[in-house]
Every structure is written in structure tokens, then in C-alpha cells.
Length: 98
Length: 209
Image (cartoon, rainbow over all chains, first blue to last red; front, side, top):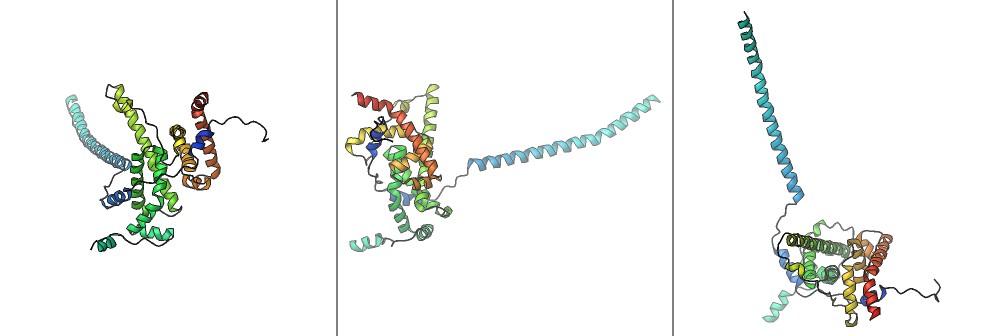
């Protein structure tokens, strides 16, 4: 860019200048002691929500499968009775027809 | 007797060690290694936290949390980056989590106020933040700038804080953010454009005075 050209005023520049050469803030005393104190405390184990929901989903699936198996078993037992009923019913019908 | 107690309670400082040696000592729970890492990075962590949170008490708490996590998770550190980069990453994540948590609390407060709950916390305006490292004559402008920095999105905020508040080189900041220098430059450009936009009115007001 030509040095003689007038550059438009940069609105940001004065604000950037205000933090130029700023000193890094020093951490207050006593934090290290707190860190060491915290390190000596036993760690509480936190179970992540994702793992907890996975376990819950597995339990629901397991219960669902159990219910499905029980339901199919009971319906199978019903099926084994019905042919006999049908047979006797039919023979009775035949009997009455004689 | 007093001399003996002082002698016993102050462990001799560690000689100059390589990062691998420091990591090995940290893994063994050596308190002198903790002290060395803390002394080397505590001000960086605190200053970064101040840039994000703009509150001294919150920055102190975050500094404590960062070092507890650094020392506790040192076994998980694979050594792909330097200790400094790793510490910065933990600090940034902690700060961003803290901000998100604060926003969630604020949203909850608004919801509560909508449903008739009290909203005393909401009514209080945020005080101006005065960074302790800024010279007196610049404090007012810097406070306005910090307010605008707080409104940037996460990535732009991080790029700006690392390069302008923490004064890291672009290469160092890119490494901390795990992006290319080009991507960092672009983030800084966008951050500056957004800041310029946000500060336009303040600048006009200053010129009119």
C-alpha cells in the first residue's frame, strides 16, 4: 500500500493498544496448598451418564426378552391344549350327529 | 530446634530436568515435581482463566482444578505434546466448561423468572473486569475490550486470548488449539472483525466526547 495514502481509522486499534505490553497476572498464593490438599483427598468415582444409560438399556432389553420368552411359552402351552379341546369337541360333535 | 523444623519441612528444589524426567517424577507422586510444574505454569493458567472468566475468584478455582487434573491424569498423558501445551489444553477446556455451566444456570434462572420464581441474580449487572496487569491509563479501554472478548464464540475467543492476552506465538497457539497456523490466522482475523464491530459504538462515543 502507498505510504502517503490516508488509512481509515481502525476502531479496534486503541483497544488493542490498551492491552499491549500487559503484565501476565500472577496466580495468588495458596493455590498450590489447595491443590496438594485436594490430591490427598480420596477420589470420588463418578459413573458417566452414558455408561449408566447403557446399563439401563441392557436391563430393559433383558427384562423385555424375559417377558417375550414367558409370553411365547404360555401361548405354546395354550396351543397344546387347544388341539385336544378341538378333538374332543369334534368327536362330541360327531357323537351328537350319530 | 526451629532451624531443624524449617530444614525438614522445605524439600530441596529439583535440579533442571527434562520433560520426560519431570513426567516420571509426577507419575511417582513426587511433591517437588508438582511444585516445579505448578511454579512453571500457574501464572499462565491463572492469566488464561482470567481472560476467559474475567473474575479473579473463578480464575483461582479453575487454576486449582486444572492442576489437580494435571497431576491426577498424568498417567493418561501420552507425551504427544509438551507439558505446557497439555496444561493449556486442560485450562481452556475447564474455562469453556465453566462458561457453559454459567450460561446453563443463567438460562435456568430466566426460565424460573418466567414461571414466577425470584430472579435476584439476574438483576445484577456484570461488573467491569479490570485485569491486574494493565496500566492504569488503559484500564477503561481494556475493560471494554474484555467485555467484547467475552462475546466471541469459543474458537475465536481462544485464538484471541492465547495470542493477545497470553502473548503466545501463532505457532504455539496453533499447537495448543491443535489446528494449523493458517486456520489460527483466519480465526484471529474473524475475531478482530467481530471485535471491531462490537467496539464501533464505543469508539464513536469516545471520539464524540
